[in-house]
Structure formats: C-alpha cells, structure tokens
View 1: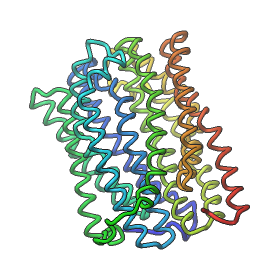
View 2: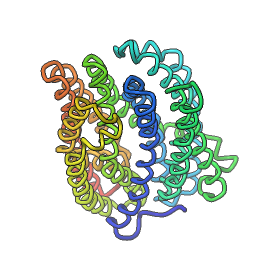
View 3: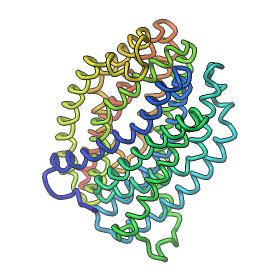
View 4: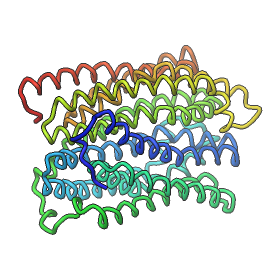
Length: 447
C-alpha cells in the first residue's frame, strides 16, 4: 500500500524500503541467472557465450527504459510528497503516453538491426547464431519490459516497495519453469530462454495493472487527467530522458568493453559472463539503497524538507558502505566456487579468470555504494545534468580501459574497467551533491 517517507526515522524508513527492493532486484537478476545457468549447463559454453555477449547491448536498450521510467516516477513521487493528488494522476497519465511511444519506437528500430549490431560488436562467428536468436526475441518483447518497469516504478513512487517484490517473485518462478520447459522439451535452444523472460515480464506487468486499478486510487486517472498540456509532458521528459540517456551512455562503454572481450576469445567471454552474474548479485544491496534514496529524496523534496534529505543521505552512506565491505569479502573468498556453478567441473581456466574479476571489482565496491547514493539523491532532487555528466565519465573511463588496458593486460585489463568507471563517476556526483544541498539550503527552497 502507499506510504509517505516524509515522517519517521530516516535510517529505518530507508532500510525497510530498500529491503524489498533488494529482494526484488535479486529475483530480477534470477531472470538472467536462470537463463545463464540453464543455458550453460544444458546447452554448453558456446551457448553461454552467445547469451553472455548480448548483455551490454541489452543494457544499452533496456537500461534506457529502466532509467526513463524511473525518471517519470520521480515526478510522481514529488507530487505525492507534496500531497498534490491531481499532480500524481496527471504525471501518471503523461508517463503512460510517453512510455507507449518509446516502446513502439525502440521495437521498430532494434528488431531489424539486431544482426548488424552484433556484427559491428565483433561477435565471434561460432556464437553469432545463438546471440542473434536470443537478442531478437528480447527486442520483440521490449514492450513487456516497458510495461513492468513503468508500473512497478509508479508503485514505488508512492512508497510501496513490497508489492513489486511479490510480483517479481511470481515472475521469476514462472521464468524458471518456462526456461526448463522451452529448453528441455522444445528445439528452441537459447531462443526458449529469451521467450521465457519476455512472457514472465508480461505476467508481472499485468499483475501491476490489476493492483493499481484495484488498490491504488491515487494512480487511477479521471477522464480529464488525460487532457495533458505540453508542460505535463515536458516535466517527466526533462527528468526521464536524461536518466535513460545516462544509463545508455554507460552501456556504450560496456559495449566497447564487450567487443574487446570478444577479441580475447570465447573462454574470456564465458568467464566474464559467469563472474558478472555473481558480481551483479553482489552490488544489489548498494543498488537497492540507491533506489530507495531516489524515492525518499523525491518525496521529501516535494514536502520541502531539505534537512531530512541530508540526514537520510548520511545514514544511508553508513549502511550501504558497510554492506559493500561484507559483500566484497564473500565474493573474494568464495568466488571460484560460485563461478563453478555456472561453468561446471574441469573449466579451471575460466574459473581462475572469473576469480580475478571478482577480486578486482570487490575491492572497489565501497566507491560504487557512494555512487549509487549520490546519483539517485540528485535524481530525486530533479537534477539531470550532473548525473548525465557522470555517465559520460563512466563511458570515458570504461572505454579507455577497454582500448588500452585490455590491449596490454588482456583479461586483467578488462576487469579493471568497471572500478575505474565507478571512480570517474563518483567524484563529480559527490561534489555536485554537496554543492546542490548547500545552494538549496542557502536559498531556503527545494525547487
């Protein structure tokens, strides 16, 4: 149910709001992990590399969707914190219209260009067929991703992080069942894993639709709410497009890195893919604290309580950095055993390379924790320029590592790309947050 984050102890509110986000993000990763684990163990390393090499490209397209819909929801959260019921409904209508347009455009652009994009990324011939089959179906299902991400973010904007968790759990279990059904009992191969993901997203999106219309009257629009002005559309676009763009900019660097990995051969791609799945689970606590700060900040920004925002940021930094240290210790200590789950016995070279990745990344998790907090806090304040600049910094640092370090250090150089990108983005975000809060407090206003 809807909940205001403008009252009560900030640390307690943020933690218990972030906890369902963490569990939900964990189950969302299980979408991808289920595909990877089942594909790797049943269809083999070539199929695993085929699915894995699509990750950066999916991040480019679907990352834009996630960033854009998160930006739309920030506007709704600000109106909700300000107790502006009409603004909440109209911002929801604007978000729906804009999301439908983006889903149609992205589908029409990406589907016919799938093979050309993979060719430009230097995808090895031996994994091209699997990569194309997997990616094509995911792109055909972009609308399903837009549906779920938009509606779940709108539910989050109203302070409810538990309901999207329930829907994600249901979708994840459905995804795993469909994975086994399509891969084991049909000749679809990796395409079956992709279809399972799309169908699961459709199911979770429809659950969100039903919940909103039955349980959240705050989001149920009146007929006149659909009569939008240019201002109604501009406000979510002014936040949503930069947020989507900054994630896509980050993804471009990941694509350059993926191309460098492809040049190192299928073993490097498989090792990076398996280790990255573990790494993505490891960063979920930090990511979840960051997502919680976006909603927390947006609601308190609408309520005009800057002191409460600063207090929440300080307390969240302590919690998130503490989690980052603990997660790093686990990944570094037990990494090789976790990687073996994906690639099986006898793949010593792959396991060794994966352990190197987890060690290098784990040592820098604390920087990533701060990056998530400052980026999401600025976005909750409606700031878009500096987070976008930070995304460009990530692109530059990741690309430099891919082009230079990979050439000289091979796989070890590729593993350094993410930590360098985090450092390059965290510095301007930290400075911008301090200056923004100081400026707003001096002016005595949150807007």
